[in-house]
Length: 297
Image (cartoon, rainbow, N blue to C red; front, side, top):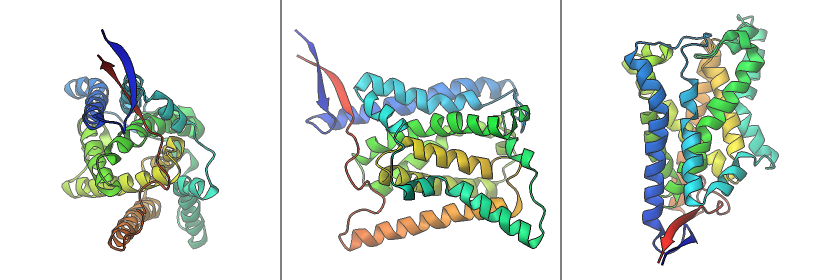
């Protein structure tokens, strides 16, 4: 006779369950996203800036949908949903989440002082796969909901905590960077910006994505597992680095700042480890523990 038993993910025999949960998540996230992107690639469709069709944006929801499905099947849905609405955190973490937009303000101020050409306001509403007719507010909202929550609910909200139960924070973030980078692969065939990458640009993109994985992982952990904050950071970064306004000094400052911050965090983590101090990248307190559902006999 069998019954459903719910046990903590930290309980006996949970390591294999967590591994299966992570694998199921990655396969589903890839499968859902690539199911949209691969037919576009084989059909020769190319996503353009400021044009609403063809679009890759539905594929960006794959990580979130996969996380919700696997979390629901493994008893981890409640902590995942809680993280998506966790906004009551110390103000310093909101400052980090808004840092791409703060940098944007600083760069625009410098441009104004030195007399450089400022990007047209409408340029911030020109994003690949979205119609520019939506305006800056409409495009920004979709970037937050689809690009931000669509990706971060899965990558940081679901996959990172699972990885961190098997690995220390830095290796977990690096492994996640590899998974995250691989998920982007079909976009190199369908998104116009990606199609135009040179070998050097791809290397820079991979380094930037790895830096982003470290910075976002740190923000997620230290904010107590707030998916909302990492979604805000991700959306803000894309607004200032992936819209038509992302040129010249603005793009250079934002991307360089992310890489420098990630290197600083890695150095601080290594120093902390050598001196026996708590992890700089890990959570201050244990994050909510996901549960696993299995059949008990």
